[in-house]
Length: 518
Image (cartoon, rainbow, N blue to C red; front, side, top):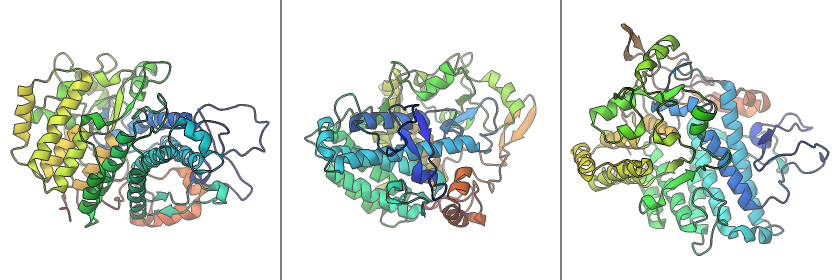
């Protein structure tokens, strides 16, 4: 795949305005420069959707890119060497690549919507799936991608983004509040648009639901619940948004889980596999805060989440300097030598699951015990089934009984955090929203001992004493879209492009603050 930044006669346009992605391949012959570069020509919409899904999922599972941001910030994973990213030093090139690919994904999804809306093209595209369903699925996937983006950066170009053909060369940054309002509106529209009696895409072109309109509709509505919960500290109507989505039809069981299914064939394999066995790196493993938490609960999922070193499971110390990390890693599992199940080529990456939905509904229903137990039970079952691990009913029920003795905000947050393993962005978001789990390492706190020397977590970038709260805007935005970038930066704390300004929905005032829902 190739990406192109195009320069226009009115100056250098912003990335969000002009980034193009040829998801299905590219041509090295530049003889047709007078053709519209925004049009993929006769590429069928189902192929465009397939390539777009793969483009973004490759980015999301890349441990060289996204792995060095929110997978680390959630403290699910830790670096075993070169630990600068764990200690909050952000690589501008990696941030820029994620930013660019995310907007390229949105551009392609908008093209799918346009191809199925335009009277000149919609009849041809209907050969590959019902027009209304293709539009609705593209809107749903777009909302999910944009939600991940805004939860990483905060304010971003959205309403004016990707409108180069309309003459928008420089893009206004929408506030995160307005982005959330728009995403909830679009997901509701998408849900209402699905025709459950017609396929979304022809078979084989959709690696999430294989064109099933019922499952896509349930995903759209379940995603509405996730986004509504994010607003629980700032919008008094959040429960109403969830109940409306439930009435419209959410996940009914684990059969509705939204997974992206990677493949054994060719280069269609998961980015996790690529990192360890194609790129031949061993610089990530499970982090000690997660391992210690699961050990304290005697969690039956721990042997699924990682492998042992000489029969003992240890988490990699989180945030120690390079020399200490290298020494301590000898005690931890080397996933390249002893890989856990998810490092296979055809891993099905969890985008959103029934167990997560149960935790959301539990909180929305004032910490309903039965929904909490359902969430824990289905989480254990999901991980056991996916990893082909035998967790006995006795062990599973015993665990459910133990952790549901007291169902409150902390219990729900802890179990959701464990369930969201490998879904680093959502786990990081939930920490920022709730302040849980307490077991995560905050700046200045003790990490552990290596060769008799005690270490504390000391970030390399100012974080105001808390776990990182945002990703910095890439430097390209300050040069290509300066005026609107400056407006967005001025709305941040200290009017600087920093890592400690909170999201709109994050109202915590201290590192151990746990604000109640409205």
